[in-house]
Length: 101
Ligand SMILES: [Cu+2]
Image 1 (cartoon, helix red, strand yellow):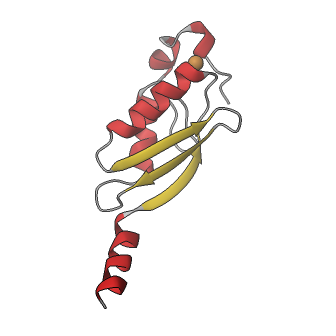
Image 2 (image 1 turned 60 degrees about the vertical axis):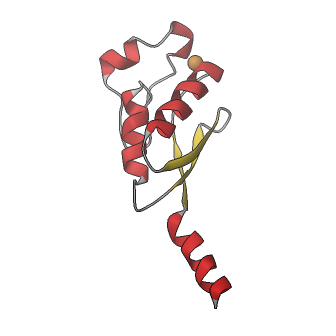
């Protein structure tokens, strides 16, 4: 019984989600992952430069993928649900100004 309830609890406290984030390079990766991890409840964030996809692990009682996408957009990166502010995007280094959709 103890093992079963421990297993259920672990499932409840961690969720995984993937979503699209546009960017170019390793500097982008640092900013994208850094912005995601600043969100309380975000446990890990891994941006794949080739696919342009973030794999997010988070605690669903503290946050949700939309809040994390909002934080990433706040750093200048468009996500599949939330667009970055034009001014923030324009402040990115030239090499990081990815092609916008
Ligand atoms: Cu970059």
